[in-house]
Structure formats: C-alpha cells, structure tokens
Length: 114
Image (tube, rainbow, N blue to C red; front, side, top):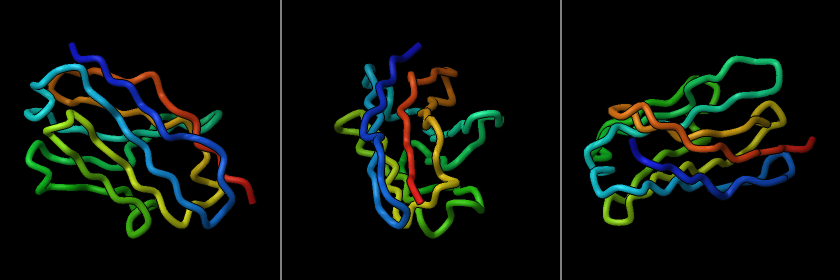
C-alpha cells in the first residue's frame, strides 16, 4: 500500500484553471502507473487521465482531452493534473490512484461555477 494525498482543489469560474497535485508516501511511486479519476454527485467514478511510470505514455478521456494535462515528477513522488478551460460539468471530487498497488487518495473537491 502507498498513501496518496491530493491537494489543489477549489472553486473556480468557468474558463478558469486549477492544478491538482497528488503526493505519494513511497519512493516506489516511480514504478507505478498513476491515474486521476473523478466522481460527480449521483454518478459513477470515471477515469480522467492516466500516465505511465516513465511519463512517456498518457491517456485522456474524451471529455477532458485538449484541456487537461497529466504529468509526474518521480523525484518528488508527485503526479499532477493541470486543468484548463474548466467547465461546470468538470465539477466533481477528484481522486488519484496508484494502479499497481490499488491505492486511492482521499479526494479533492473541484467546483466550477457558471
């Protein structure tokens, strides 16, 4: 298991930007595929973006492609989600996830006002 702590959520107007961070407790972080998921009220948790352990392989859901960027800094045991051109439908709790160990963070709330 690895502990994951998200930060960077908040309230922003439509069209604005936020940067989420997820810090991991273990140096083995550099060997994990990391992902960001989100869950809106009344909806299932959905995959937003994923990044391979080297950072060279990324995936984005169609709903965020071109607006969000996932990146990682293995020296800091941290994965990021840069979110630009935010829309009200991006409002959700955002979670980071370490695939190889099945660990979730506690989540951070993102609210986008229209």
